[in-house]
Image: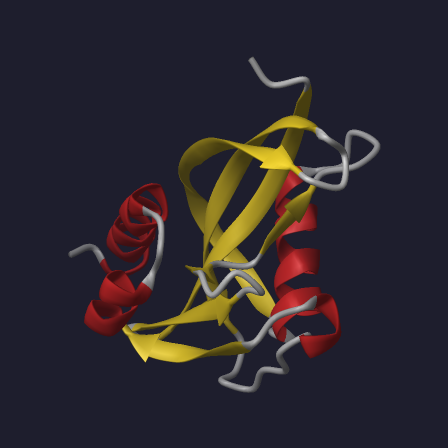
Length: 138
């Protein structure tokens, strides 16, 4: 059982049929997300994290689902459970800026099929599919 539970929010960011993914410091391909602090609004947090991590101004189209995962935090020396509310988002432009200073190694917009293969976690792949259906109806 996790000693620390963190509520988070993030975005499946689309530009047309392309999806933005980030490569984190563990070499995992992920979607932008962050911790909700001080009972903040999940949608606001998701939009802020997309902008902070990817430099993308986006708009929320619809909630895209929830995921959760547990991991051992070396710095905190305890089990952590992250619960993430995801949103299907549309980028306002294709411009982006990867937040290398936050430890990200790479990132870009990828065609959906490429992104679905690249993304590291199966749960995230399901969120991508849900978000695509919400945005494109297919």
